Amino acid sequence: ETGVTQSPTHLIKTRGQQVTLRCSSQSGHNTVSWYQQALGQGPQFIFQYYREEENGRGNFPPRFSGLQFPNYSSELNVNALELDDSALYLCATQGATSTDTQYFGPGTRLTVL
Amino acid sequence: AQKITQTQPGMFVQEKEAVTLDCTYDTSDQSYGLFWYKQPSSGEMIFLIYQGSYDEQNATEGRYSLNFQKARKSANLVISASQLGDSAMYFCAMREGQRTYKYIFGTGTRLKVLA
Image (cartoon, rainbow over all chains, first blue to last red; front, side):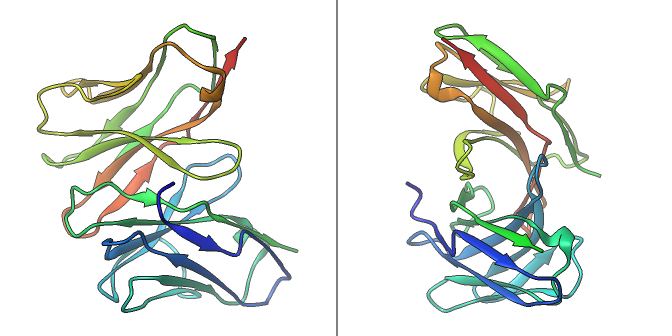
C-alpha cells in the first residue's frame, strides 16, 4: 500500500463529455504527477504539480488540465473527450527532492464511447 | 532525447529460477535515476528498485537486483527465485530533468512464471 488513492476506479463517458479524476497524496508528498497509459503501452507523462503550481507538462493538448490543492491532493480534468482518451490514468506522488521515488496510485480506467 | 528501450515483449521463467529483464536507456544528462516498477493485472504500478547514476554499487532489494552497466547504458532487472506472484508487466523508467521530476517509461515486459 502506497497511501496514494485515486477515484473513481472506473469511468465510462461519451465523446465530447468532460471528466474529472481525483488523486489523494501520500502523507508528506507535495509533488504529484499524472500519467496516461494506453492499452499495451508504458505510462506517458501528462503534467506535474508542485505546491499547487504546474511544474512541467508533457505533449498533451490544453484540454487536459489539472489542479493541486493545499492538502496536496490533485485533480485531472479532461474536456471534449475523444475516443483515444480511453486509457488508465495514473497519479504518482513524491516528496520534495528530485531524487525521491514516485509512488503510484491504483489508477482510474477511463472508457470513452 | 531521453529514451528507454525494453526489447523483450514477453518472458517465461520456471518457478524458483532466476530471470533477467533487459532495459537500455539513452540520455545526455550526467545525473539521472533508473527505476523498475511491477504492474499486475489490477493496474497499480508497484515500485521495486532504484539506481542513481552516481551509485557505484548495484542496487538490491530482497529478490530484486539491478545490474547497472553505465558505459553500456543498461539497467537490467534480475529477479531471483521466481514466484508465481511475480507474473506481471515490468516497466523500466528513467527520471528526466532536475526541475520537472517526470519519468520516461519503456514499453514493458510481460513476465509469466510457470509452476
